[in-house]
Amino acid sequence: MSNGLFHSFSARLDTLPDINNHWHYRRELELVYFKRGNGTQFVGDSVKPFKDGDIVLLGSDLPHFWQFSKKHLKSGGSDAVEIFVIHFNEDFFGDVLLCLPEFQEIRRLFEFCGHGLQISNSVPILPNPG
Image (tube, rainbow, N blue to C red):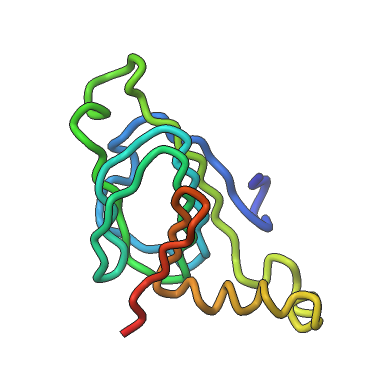
């Protein structure tokens, strides 16, 4: 969690569908878990649906936003959204760890997520890098 001026990562729980519901990007990587919520995601030049249980990893400076379905735009009730969001820098583990052979796949994942990576129903939906 973020404490003070310097921190390794920040984490939050979003329960309102219109929080950060605008085209934006961040310098940090962003990991999003949609525990409850569905709609259409706009990531870079890709437009795809998202649903309960999806996980999305966004690379640095990748523009994005999520448009929730109309049922979630009603206030409260059983259709409220529940989204966990974590922001972190690529060097979150430190410069040395990412250079170790054991972290090669993590380093490759960070490089690949520049176009966004969606995991839906435990099957990754890879971006079209072209």
